[in-house]
Length: 266
Image (cartoon, rainbow, N blue to C red; front, side):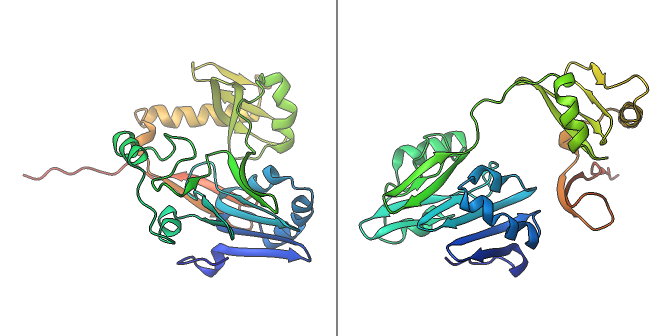
């Protein structure tokens, strides 16, 4: 395996005997967590390797089995092609097509130009001989061949806040929380290890108690939003920033920059 153009700090790995794990990109796992995850690799629990914060490509090997996992956002797509000599994979479809000059797939190219989406036609890529691993799937290469395997569930079990509260409290932190109350209802808010408060898409606020500290924080956020003139999300450019030691739980913060100012000349 080789990489091109990635800084050294964005390519990290751990290994022990027949087990190996590598992450490429912005991965919130530290080196110790990567080493500990080798037991997960041994168990072939591929989905557990995608739960660290960040956006990254995961490559895991357990004996003769190799799993290549892109991120759900599609920032690290995975392409592959099978040959008589084995399986080639890459994050670049063009690189695989260049192996023998594979031509464009006209249908996929037309769909891509019309809809500007990479996954319109399932596993087909822009090149006829190259396949794309669909979002939520991984590429699994074994002695029997290569195929794509779904690791992300198609549907999520609906939860209401009373049922989810124990888990929110156990995993909560003093940062923004997003709770899935129903498959079609997401509620942003605030949580701590002991409290939780969210505001539903219909404007209803749900909290663990009327005197909840999380409810106080949430109301303060809403007051700031009101005083700022209720700005829409698209006016704040998003930034992904690593949380340093002493700033709370290790991981990443999604930060929104202030709205750009506009000036008018004479």
